[in-house]
Length: 136
Ligand code: ADP
Ligand code: MG
Image (spheres, rainbow, N blue to C red):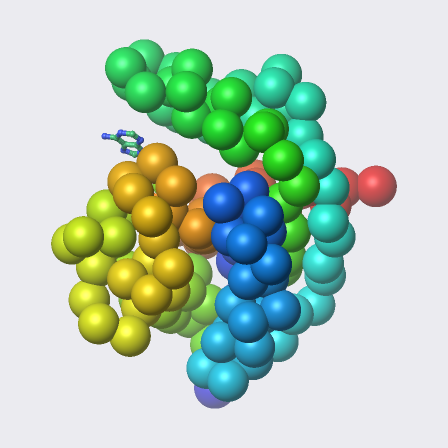
């Protein structure tokens, strides 16, 4: 039985700004993900605030939302078996300094805030996040 699943991935402004989007997409493809939807957009700060609402009580919330809306991002729906967990593994830890060798954040992340990629953290949140960006 296949357990094909979807997750939401975002290539964040720090990576798009350094023209790393093609390279990062190729890493997903090389690791068996299919990119089933994709768009390059720039968010309004109010959209970033909605997207990151779960973090609204955190001290870094305002900076986080300002940052995510500071430049173009590439938003993708990725498909793979156990895509949510597989993507979290491939991304690495939130803080690039703590991320394992070979992970996207270890390779490209600049700092805990400019860590190059976002990935859904559960199948439930993946559905919510995919709807947020791709509901017609
Ligand atoms: P992840 O992106 O690994 O799921 P979180 O959901 O905890 O991490 O946090 C969302 C984003 O908020 C992180 O990717 C990072 O950009 C930012 N962030 C998290 N913790 C901090 C922190 N202590 N200081 C600054 N930014 C942070
Ligand atoms: Mg998270």
